Length: 138
Ligand code: CMP
Image 1 (tube, rainbow, N blue to C red):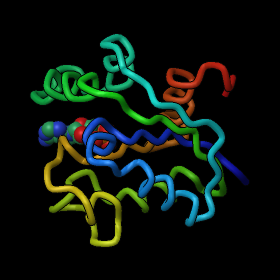
Image 2 (cartoon, rainbow, N blue to C red; image 1 turned 180 degrees about the vertical axis):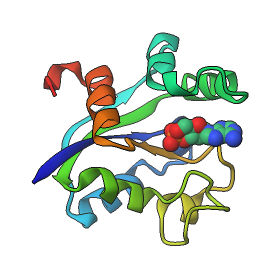
Image 3 (cartoon, rainbow, N blue to C red; image 1 turned 135 degrees about the vertical axis):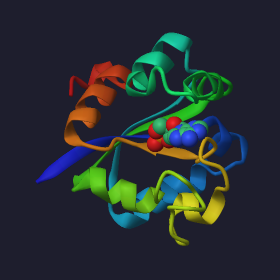
Image 4 (cartoon, rainbow, N blue to C red; image 1 turned 90 degrees about the horizontal axis):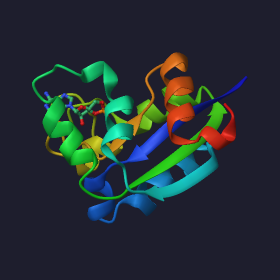
């Protein structure tokens, strides 16, 4: 059964010219792009997207980071798309958790500047896709 997930190439990934690399890995894995957009994120969308982190010590810095430059947002579809993209991304901390061969493991150093985001559950995917791509009616 096919499912959908939200993928973001965060401002650090866009700034470093890694959009093509990330999209290429998604396509080579066999996942499909359903929607793709370069987008400036306003504070309201950032706070809604990261609502579960509100109150954490890194929240303010995370909001500033994600609103600090354009992101590439994608709706990605395929069998087990949520887990499949999380495997491609690697663990949240690019050095401590992400394996070499993953996007974060290959290109990242710091936990905040971890290049990509992928929804972590079907519930998060549904919530996040509604925020970022309301027109898909997911
Ligand atoms: P993401 O998968 O988008 O989900 C939450 C984000 O918060 C995470 O990736 C990181 O960019 C950021 N983050 C998580 N933990 C920390 C931390 N300890 N310090 C700074 N940023 C963090």
